[in-house]
Image 1 (cartoon, rainbow, N blue to C red):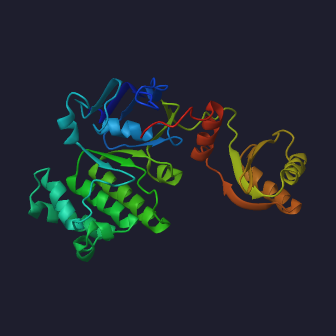
Image 2 (image 1 turned 120 degrees about the horizontal axis):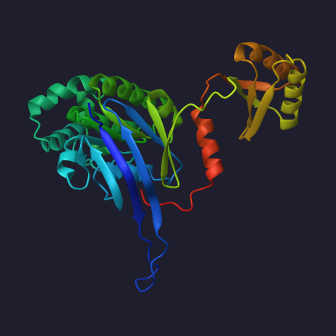
Image 3 (image 1 turned 45 degrees about the horizontal axis):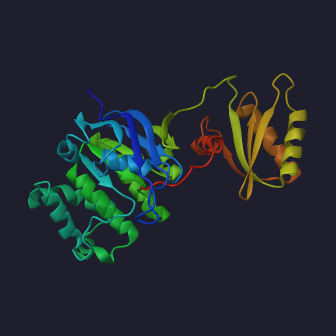
Length: 339
């Protein structure tokens, strides 16, 4: 079985703008630089990165909405530049700011119009959409209303209904839960997890909400300064697994509690820790032989020192930490680019 998506050395540059028609153009912006990756059939592949890193630009190129400066991208073997008609028949796109629906048409009229562009008969549309509409809570009454009366959550659900009814092999999602309340966001995640898995549909998910990524993605890639790197669990090294805690207390108090814990720990297995000050608290990463031996004594030391422990995390790889570490090491984006 071949790859669903192939991207090789993809680059996108935007020309500099002119202050006045007679002014020389400004500095060129590089949105993507030599991006290379593959996505397997049925895989949910997630893109993360700071705002302006190039995530949406990449999705637009893969969706044939934007031409690359150089490089190659293929969807199901079809080139996104030379065979755009074939590519468009194989993809669906759900954006984070929907502008493709007609505001004065009802939800049902919008679905009938757009699915008609794919030569879908009205009878087939009704058969396909009924179970999906029930899952999303889009009743006949809701679909009979004008699109302009819909809340943000309902608009997003209609986008998913349109995408799932078309049942394309590849689905692109650009921040699918942005601006949604927690209930609507969880409904959208559940639909992605169940429907896309059941259909063996390939998904490329661009997200700033790392909860979406952790719940849904099979693999994660980070874009920063126009370059893409596939992330994975870091090497175990010595085999020590960190215990991560989010605590609320002054940093000197946290350090004193850690030193008190280290003094009582097994001298054969020395304690090592790192702390990062975050908004409203301190993140503590502590390494010893393992969480079973470490956690009880560590919590006792914090409680005796009056340190408030709010969260304990035993995962070997934490996406948020990896994201922040890489952004801090690379520095900020030089400037925000279109898309």
